[in-house]
Length: 192
View 1 (cartoon, rainbow, N blue to C red):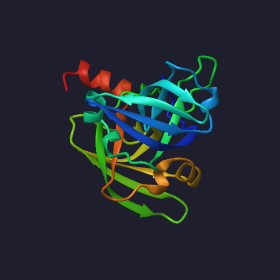
View 2 (view 1 turned 45 degrees about the vertical axis):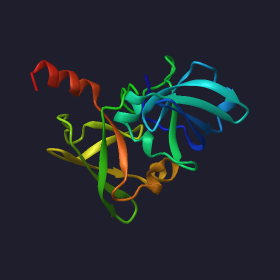
View 3 (view 1 turned 180 degrees about the vertical axis):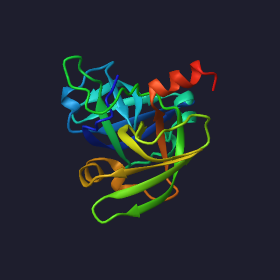
View 4 (view 1 turned 30 degrees about the horizontal axis):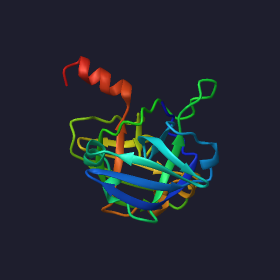
């Protein structure tokens, strides 16, 4: 389980295909604190550390992951939002995040609001958002500002802008979405 509070930005250093799988080598400041078989969220997608070498570690994405996330768009040099799994003795600063990406969305507008930025996203799933509810974008726990059918907006403060990969996001880019787990259960129970 994760909180959606990004710890570090990692950099994709190499990409290796093996059958339908892709092995990503990531450079991250906290690599020396990782261990094999540990879960780390990469742009909100939970992946298992399978190899460690000094400041680099390797994770593997299978076809299911590649089909449902934006990992297939990564190239060497891509900056990735990273979060290690939550410690049970820690604070839940964001919201409950599983690291299970529900779908991707497309950034359709970025508005500079003189001190913050408003990002608007469109998606195609049947999931819903609610104003002032939680959403996870590329692993970042955020509050929904505008909620419409198949689209929503979030506002980004300068700290989040600089310490996540939002600073490189452009109109037309795809992002990973994880909708609020409580909202998903409520929608299922109500037959939505």
